[in-house]
Length: 187
Image 1 (spheres, rainbow, N blue to C red):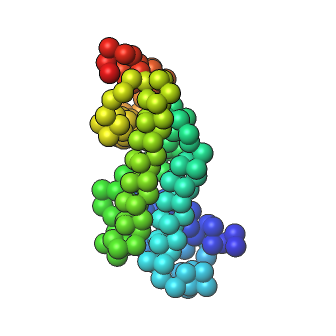
Image 2 (cartoon, rainbow, N blue to C red):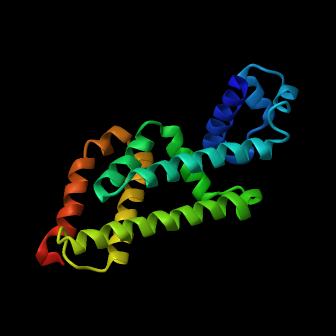
């Protein structure tokens, strides 16, 4: 089982770096095994990549969605998820911008469904906040789009600029966003 994890870790890193242009020979080299040994764990490069992407999708969406019941915790959980590893950030940017065509009907569709679920979760949180008087009544769809755009903009900024130059401002960014949606005169 340890070899399988190492294979998946190597394929994860190589996909983040090269997209689908990596070879099983590179994976085998990184893991320190013969290329033929990979086939004891995965029938093909596509099967290996499918396992890697599917595992990452589950970790990113299912774990965070299950734990978040307010926007601030979701904001921090998403950003902390990527702050742990620049490779994760590159992996996801590559996956979203250049998804492997072979997985369009499976994993790409799964990402879209889970993204839609997260978006609905954000809108539900916003509606609850409005009902409780925590924030003023506003269009939840517009605020949800603003929230997701803010998060994805920060993630892109972590690629463009050094992550440490961005992460020192995360709390202030959150406070500005929250102030914008929670003050009555902005509602």
